[in-house]
Image (cartoon, rainbow, N blue to C red):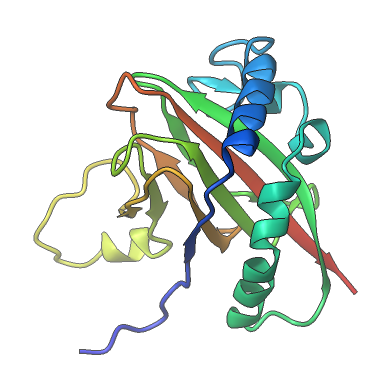
Length: 198
């Protein structure tokens, strides 16, 4: 059996120091406290995206972005993308509590969404639950074949199991979603996008 046309996803982890953890959590909570629930498109929880999309400028996340920089370059090369100057373009955080969700979306949307690589960092998360699901881009084609399992109305997807302090890098065009959060423990995900220029 040969699996054709795989989509490469990069998974890693980065554990902050206790000082970094406390500082980042305090800064995030301050922003979340000024946000409205269910305001940001596709989010039923709280999102700093309501205020702006440059969280990397608003709070000190240098410990994280410096920590993953080489992995971003490595991932870019593994996708066989042309050599470019890679830079972070946007960053925001989402806070999920019980039953909060993120609807299906991608991070590519015309000129203003011309991101190349996207990522999510699970700064706070119950281990093994509240995972991201990547939607199969062949969903419509698969549904024209006689597969034996009914998939319902949601796009056919694959869940990536993650723990707190894991991060995932993926092509920005790849659609994804998060099902209703099944826990009373908070889930804080920091999302970000990279672009490139010659």
